[in-house]
Length: 322
Ligand code: ADP
Ligand code: MG
Image (tube, rainbow, N blue to C red; front, side, top):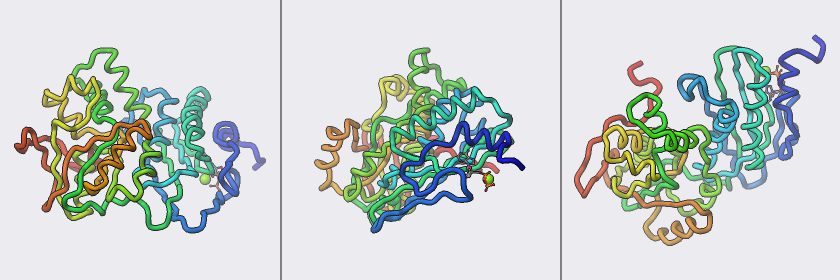
């Protein structure tokens, strides 16, 4: 075949950009990267399926942003520095306006973090996006899920719930007014990965995770891997002004605590680190709130005025009931 085909043209047109940090980017059988001495390579993949991870009517520019943002968030949660991304794109047809907008959302965010798209794959089928991200972290310094210790504090960055409140609104479980929906849905479509915070937490956090499944579910993952339990004080969970209007309803509270897609970081740290962590709020301009404690035992209990409260839903599980 000549070196021109619709697939080749599409890759050349939308997904080939100079790969500043790579030895070799898009175009060959493999990309080549040079990993620095003394660093571990941090690698993660996330897939987004139309109808499962996003509403089919989502604006493609938002989707391009989100496909990369959720991966940057995994790099953030390890305390790593992102450098390289791969994009496996499955589209039902070639829609140039769609591809141009998707590529814009993707590359605008990539540029912000100095990430190079170094390869991928392009196929036809139901709309599905898989991004693989790679970065570096000093050997041995990555923030793992398994390091929480009894007596540690539990912290969360930013505020949680807006993304899930927008989803709950779309499903008719709660009602947001138009302005609130518009603001909340942007948290869903264009999450901010906490990359600088993740790196700043190296040496401070004993365990970390990014909140994709829901605050309680993701903290439960830390607990399971660390062999500990945790308590979370409902009143200290940080919410936006929108969240504050809904946290006293059952559906609103469920969305805030058990709904995902915020991409904030939840982490644990020794109480001696409180001042250093609070300083990060000023240095990075990101609110960081202490919400609970690591305890002996298993699982996460939610406390309201010191009493345990039950919450349904324990986060999103793709295979629940399968
Ligand atoms: P192969 O047949 O060897 O898998 P492809 O024709 O699939 O090669 O891809 C050609 C080049 O384009 C490769 O370097 C691949 O990494 C890159 N590529 C393909 N699709 C994408 C995409 N959506 N985004 C970025 N790079 C891509
Ligand atoms: Mg291929």
